[in-house]
Image (cartoon, rainbow, N blue to C red; front, side):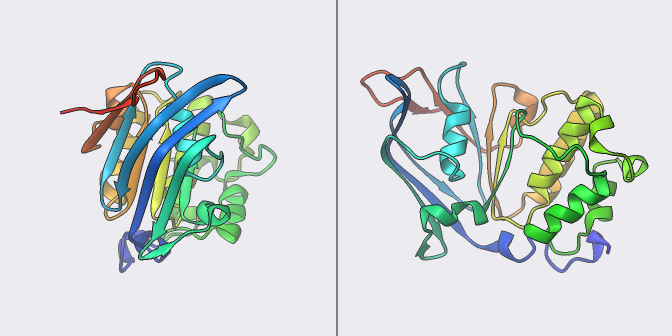
Length: 231
């Protein structure tokens, strides 16, 4: 299949208009608060950078938004169109990439994306071979992922998030282990395939969030609200 012939870059599910409302959200692990008093709105068609020092909760916030963690207080409300999404179903609308996420190392690259495509459809016009071409790994299609370099693995992690047919894309430090060529590829993919979707990037590295129009800064939790909007 050829992505150039796709009728819509956003595919099927990815074109759904989404809204995420954080209301008084907080998260703690044992007695340690990572996030607190956080209220904010995210809308489809917009891109957001979540900034802040280590320990301010960037990764934790992305996991809460994606339905992988539950808040300790407050709420994360997700809407698909006018309909509220059940918290147990949020994962159907969001794709996620983080440096620590695991890949099935026994799969070849083609097998990995074939497996993903079976459970989570790719963007309209894409099949596993087309995805592999987009990330510049056609030479490695039949190679087991366990033989990949760290930079190749990161390209795979990014691809499974970017080319998943989801309206919300969550990226945690997306350029980890990428060289300059890989960073340039990442920026091209963002420019080309995020149209109409909601993009949220957690990072302190400018090349990772330069495409984001909205920037939010987290600080270490105190008794006061911890989110401030940058100019």
